[in-house]
Image 1: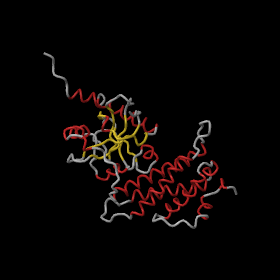
Image 2: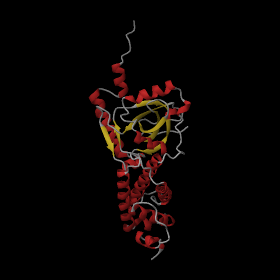
Image 3: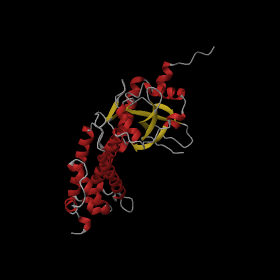
Image 4: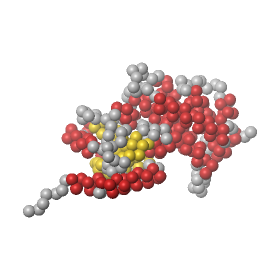
Length: 182
Length: 133
């Protein structure tokens, strides 16, 4: 079997030396897979594989469940910083994969056979990004960029807030401060 | 300066209740913005639907949310456009998928018909200019 036709199962079997991240099992499986898949990211045949697509789908469901059930920002117990590190590494690898999947051919035509795969990887990357933001907010990570509010005077801020008052229902929701960490 | 297209999702700086700090909140760009434009018309994407406005719910973790760049569930509210100074726009985070944008625009048109005009029209109707003497 050529390297280009490797499946998720082959990749996982050949990765015993990678240490387990503190992630849910399906997400940990994905983390191992994407670390290995980075080197094959430009192979069309690899991404066409149904086994790989099904792994991506189950990982998407697992990540969605993690995001929807996350209580990091509503409990007093801060999350494990190692968890944030693991998701950050996963995000870096997913970003690299999104960039490298040959979604269009050399002449700019969309490869229909890769649409499902691309959508799954795109959603996975986004879910991972959302989890990283929520974890950073829960851990109060200090390198969040400041939206430069101190440069504006109080009247300008008040007028700006008033403009949104009637139409921005719930913008004061603390949970939405996750956007400060995006 | 950056240009923005209709359908882009941007982060807007928004002061908190006590006016001390600023936070970032997502909004949808309604009209194309050229480099020299000083203002930008946006529709806020909110955690709660706006009263009396048709709203489209976008679920966090969906493909639409991913395209929009939303990391939380939110509502796209029709007929609630706000014109803000460009200095409050932080950056672009995503793009509204074409089908969702069409759905949003059509619900906005329906809402305009029900209310008898756009948000700006409604403002002018409720604040008529004083008669010239």
